[in-house]
Length: 293
Image (tube, rainbow, N blue to C red; front, side, top):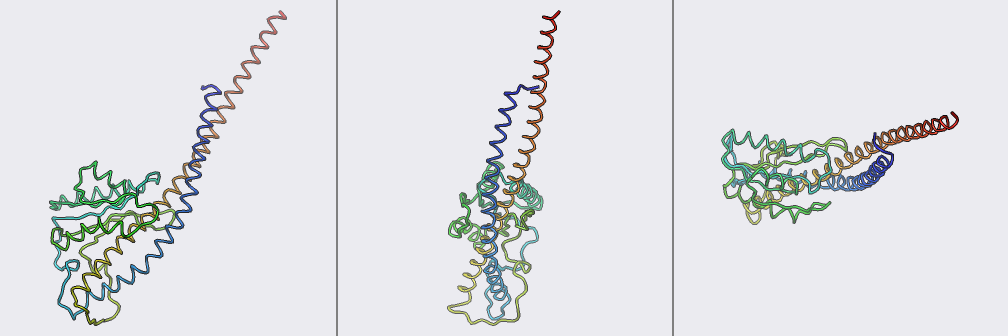
């Protein structure tokens, strides 16, 4: 059994760790509320621009078809783009591990289905590091986004994928991120981003006719690019809300576990101290008996 001094040192170390995890839990809880409010605030804009895009896609006045709305997409695309959204920091449980594990499985399936090229855009330091280790073809990246997503930081790396679709260099683009369900549940998802499918756009609300100014191609081009940017921003906002929730839960679990370890160490320390006292008493009694004899 370890000595009393060694056990006291371990108890002190775990107590210091518990203070750190408790502080991180409180910080994550504060950031989580702000991230959730930001995520919910972005949803009305995404929903409105989705309705506009759905109406434009279904409008019959224009014969112009944007590459984002191309029909007859290959059932098994050979050139795939992938936008990976992860966190910049760790200590958030299995958040990044879950999405990256799902991502590896999907990439293997695409390759088995005949994909000859997979281009990757990484948003977040954890995803970038993982993709570099597995030797992925990384065409753009952005890290150190902070606690607030800024669209101007995202546009540059994402534009690489958007331009590739417009130029016909990619058949399909997917986005992988962690969707926020509630504080205790976050769901890793991989969704098709481009071309925009009917499922993604939804059903137009009624029949709309448009007069385009200056012309249909300019209006549709700009609107659909804004729509894709809104989808990506919403995915990043969802991922950040998931990150803070997962970190709060992970730090609370670490704090609780530290408390359990401290109690166990204190019990061991008390037993060791009791054994030492019993041994000293036995030696004293034995010495007194020897003198008396």
